[in-house]
Image (cartoon, helix red, strand yellow):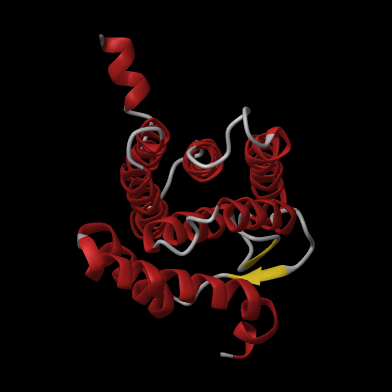
Length: 229
């Protein structure tokens, strides 16, 4: 027991939030097969935890393990969990008995998404961790777009969902430079994201659509125009 306490004592508050992020990713993956909407909400909640651990680390200080824990947690929450969510949504419409090619695509592209997320997170940890911008679409942004789209009902089409998954997988490993969000913009997105998570029914769908709109705007316009703001 004392050895366990000493081990945990090496971690800080920010690390605890990061570990919570990883746990939420696991829960999202499990929920995907039962309730895709719940899975999407858990992914969005994990994204909020991902932002919170950075705020805590900057204000209270982090630990040497922080950046490694963050990347490991992000693999679970923003690589594996959204990929399983996509596969679960697609599975309801595409079956091996009807369209084998589409079924394989519905599993294959999410698998590529996970692989590219791992590559992107490894490169980020090695080269971009201390910079105010990063090359390639952030895994958090990619997962947020997929989760918000499912929650808003705009990506229930298997073709659209798989196509967007493939596109985001490619964009995660491009050299396109994405600047970090300004604190006030991150706060606005956080509020919209929180309301999309907690509000049921149509109001929740409205805020999920708002989150999807903001995320897609940053995805398409951020590299060229966000620097000027």
